[in-house]
Image (cartoon, rainbow, N blue to C red; front, side, top):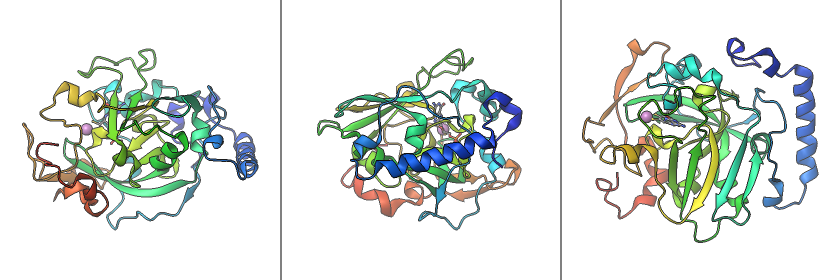
Length: 322
Ligand SMILES: Nc1nc2c(c(=O)[nH]1)N[C@H]1C(S)=C(S)[C@@H](COP(=O)(O)O)O[C@H]1N2
Ligand SMILES: [Mo]
């Protein structure tokens, strides 16, 4: 299926097949023309999005397949957290169609060789979009197994040439009341902000994400660009990113500002740490279309990605640094 949800998309925004074919041709020549140019040169500064969205994404095979059952796409698209569109899990899929994902650009700023604004399609085409399957958990204790499409955030960071003084990276989401009528009315302060320590951001598991299930992201999943950090609770994965800022100090983050007792800066998945209000030892695995059949399974340390990430936290007390 080329078009994700025609009911939500005005026909003017649907890419006709002829445009899509032309886009693919352009994309090939664009890539071929780049030849020996350096990585930074491959991300020209453009303030506007260049091509229409809603195309099927090109995926490459994955090193990250899990044996667990993939969550049905209908479930992943209808059970979301996205406070700009309401607090109920069903609200984002009902409400997020009011958002426009083209034109879109990401502003790169702070401690970086060359601050610049990059069009979303330039970002999408920068690297092949790997197909990874992640278990995705949230503090509210559910998990899904989702094939995300993107490329490692590290590739983007390397191309941006951060200064040695950049120790953290901050992500800032769109905050536009005109497109997000419930903005500021769900108890969190816009714009949504999240952050990672630089080594976390550079970890090969951290994905700059443009799609899921082989298509561009649905609005409720964070279109047109989000981050996925699979060993952390879901709120560490910001949606609809408009700014990426390289900074020296640990940046303020939305949920931590709201309640630091429950939502730590690190928020690594940790079944041994019961926060102020609930146990984090178990999760409901949403692997069928109906939540009624969700099985409760033990939560794994670092969401099962212990081998790939625990080295980053050596010597840190994860009960203090939660
Ligand atoms: N901009 C923005 N990003 C956000 C949120 C949000 O409210 N606004 N919610 C976070 C939370 S709490 C979770 S659990 C995940 C949910 O992602 P999903 O809907 O793809 O499962 O998105 C995170 N990213
Ligand atoms: Mo969450």
